[in-house]
Structures are given as structure tokens and as C-alpha cells.
Length: 151
Image 1 (cartoon, rainbow, N blue to C red):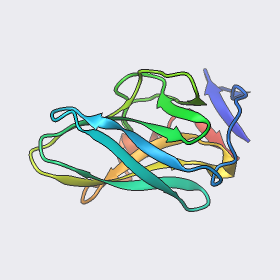
Image 2 (cartoon, rainbow, N blue to C red):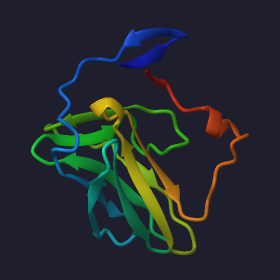
Image 3 (cartoon, helix red, strand yellow):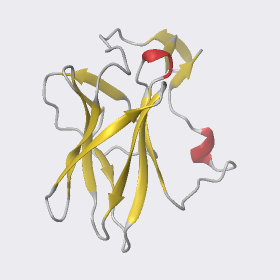
Image 4 (cartoon, one colour):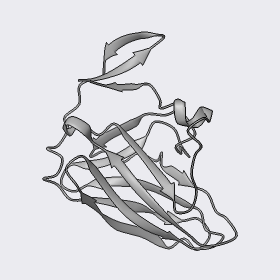
């Protein structure tokens, strides 16, 4: 069961019609901030996670959502969300929403592994790992995994 932590107590997450994950194609959709070019990457399903690799050009940032084909888009609860900002994954919904995840730029090109975790057939979070970067397991970011508990 997926539950949401509210002020230290548990409550069931709001009901939403989730597609049978793994039976739909997902795509990472968005654009590069400097060039304005489109991002459109197919995501692979491994049984619990949709993921793709994204080659990030130097000095480019990215804004994106995830399209669940035939169902709608998944998007963050706040504009410019990233793994270090507490937010919720919303959707998929057919209605267009402007909020998108934000991947910031650096001076050199990078490669990111972007994933949507879907344990027990329910999308619960989107995150990414930049190749060559690691979060120390002793850091606050490692311990702070957001308001979702999966049992």
C-alpha cells in the first residue's frame, strides 16, 4: 500500500486511476532551456521502474514531464522540482499542466539516468542520477526520501 505521511500520521494517498504500468509506453517530454530544442526520449520498463538515459549538452538545462501514452502526463506538484526539493508526483492526467521537473546546467556535458519508480504498479517518484556523481549515504539527502512509505 502506498501511504502519504501527513503531520506525522499516516493517511491513504488520494485515489487515482493508474494505468497498468508496463503495459503502456512512457516518454520523457520537454525542452532544453537554452536552445529550445525538444526532448523526446522513450523510457524502458524493467518490471518496477521506467527509465532512460539523457545526454545533457554543456550549458543546457532541461524542463520535462513524463507522458504515459494513451493515459496522460505525470508532472511534479511544484514548478522546477528536482530530487532535492520535496514535492509530489502527480498524474497521469489528460489535462495539460505547466509544472515540470528541472535539471540544471553545468559547464560540461553530462549523462543522466532518469527514472520513475513504480513499485506495486503505482508511480511514486521521479528522480535522476548524474553519471559520476554520488550522494553520500551519511548526507541529509540520503536519509530524506520524502513523504511516501511503501509496504
